[in-house]
Amino acid sequence: MIWLIRHGETEWTVSGAHTGLTDIPLTPAGEAQALAVREKLAGRRFSLVLTSPLRRAMRTCELAGFGGQAQLEPNLVEWDYGDYEGRTGPEIRATRPGWYIFRDGVPNGETVEQVGARANAAIERALAADGDAILFAHGHLLRILAACWLGLPPEEGKRFLLGTAGVSVLSFEHGARVIERWNS
Image (cartoon, rainbow, N blue to C red; front, top):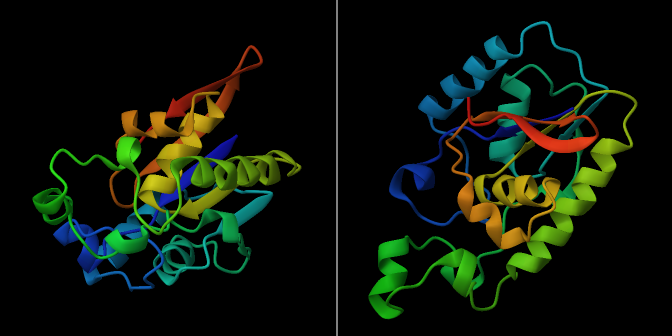
């Protein structure tokens, strides 16, 4: 199984700003969310703990009780939003009506296909573990990773909402890749 943990709340998740590579901390509420993840995962052991190198994911990993095991995985950083970094959807749509990230992308940032390639690399690393893996990362990246897990195109990540500090589990049933739990 591969467990997915989205980082806790930040100032930009509250405002709705696209937070790609900007390295901002968790809010006090985000730290409390990460501690709640610790309770949800109490007693679980993982063969592999991977975290995005951005501090909001690393701090969530630490507060969830896995900081001592964690390995940095650069493929787990959030989507590079390019010119849209720090901007909210309504701000972007004011100058680009109808804009939707999964369809229209971002100027001077990554394409959804590039994010999907990173997600697939993270999946392969997790599958190579001798047992369950847990990944601490970011909303859009994890949504795309779920789509890739199911064999869907990366843009189908649009179908998987994921809240801050959401816990999800990717698994197998009769050899088929499935989502066992989402956003709990």
